[in-house]
Length: 192
Image 1: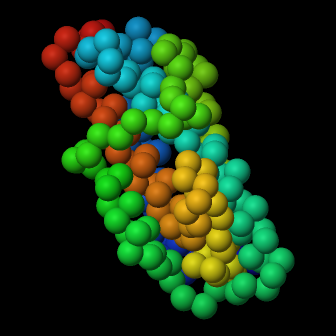
Image 2: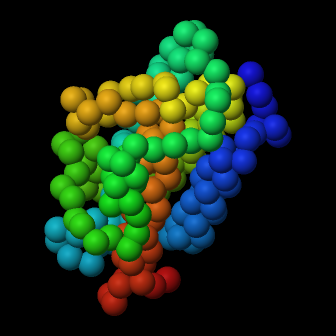
């Protein structure tokens, strides 16, 4: 198994994108109290807390599918042969998640965020989950992530490449951090 210091370029970029997301999220929530963290610009709009709680929920479900797919591929001897590649459907799905949001989607019930949560609950969980994602990417450089397959946690009939699932996580994170940033920049946001 390769270490994070010897990652192939595509996986190194993925780890860098995850680090950038974490830095962006950290800057976004820095200095916020629970009132600001849970404020939303409209009754049906999500707060910063809900955006991050939603990411925690979604990333937990994706990790629960990606990790076993990678372990099974390793056990089957599916060694890395090429950089991450996505199918036409995978590219389209990832592109649909990237900000700025062009298409609003209803969150599946399993990942709908709680209405209100403390920053001390949500933020450390975000950091912890991202650590697991980075560790998974760093520990999977020896596996063919294009042939490691899993069921999509929300569309069970659609098989997904493990590499595509990792790209989905990154795009989905960026989408909801963009949304959370718009909350913080909204007129009426409670300033300290």
